[in-house]
Image (spheres, each protein chain N blue to C red):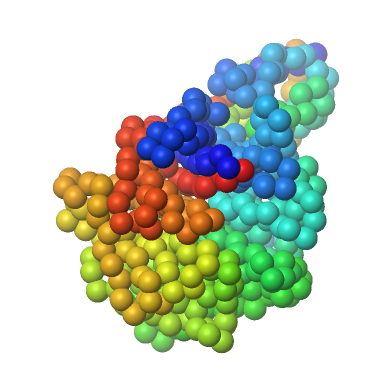
Length: 368
Length: 89
């Protein structure tokens, strides 16, 4: 088995290939100079998908099947009839223009099936390997959508898409800021399952409103798909046994704020988080980079610092900047300072793979 | 026929040398140009058919302010320059 990493950065897509345990080979970037917001490797046909954020030129999607990337259509929102404007609960017009392709996942129900989460607030589906995309109207049309707000960006965004390995019609998405939504029928009907989450940034009366929650990232234990983890704007939450409500689990130090989380593929009680100083600061607490791991379902957390910078570190790990391999032992983490680390012992010790990359948006294991 | 030029920085993503195409309004001219370079459309216009936020079009040296309808009249010999602002780091 070859281990590779897809590293999506502000200046292109890098591929790191493991040559020996301690030796990685880093590729020249694809799309040099262009922000790559997300990449996906499709184990079914070996395709690699890349979502580009050209900024001025808009979002572009590319697929590599074989040797070269080729441009494909980007998801597009259906437009309202001329003169009609939809407003959110703050009275601002709701955008129907693609700002960012933020998350990409495979839909195992069909070859070439894909899900794409976007800003503003869209979930798109492709049944043909990205040759065409369709907005998932069932989610777009939920009444509560007008209550969704931005989280870091001006508009709400879908950053996490979890497909239940037992039944691929069950899909859970995380929205900053619009809670956690789940379909059980492949996308027609959706229900908010963010009950139990608490938004410290809202007025008290609205703090537990599921529609205003800001889960920064969701992760699922593949072997126990009812066990979800969330790094929320103001804390870490774990899904209860009922599979529908959340409980806050309190990590005392160094902070409750963070973006990334990763769930162990087979052990439902193990998950990793990367805390940072909240909120307006967004840097490691005291300049020391720490990974938090729980191995007991969130009752306690271990601070993992081995091999990570403990002085003058201003690395922020974005929500897609942490990933765990299929064996549950190897981790990869990458930061806004262009540093990439890997660990082969569940995060106890980390080795620097690269120190001078562009700011990293997303890292993912590829295990072919 | 009106002549259309595309942003220099776009050339590295999509090949689009200047073209001469027919049309009485900017929208008609652009549609004709995008018929020649279909990929370029989504780089210049968004999914609503509006000019992208950081794109600018000059018709005979005058900046186009009707960015949604693009109904500006063009002459048979108009020069249409599509430009792009750059920002960021």
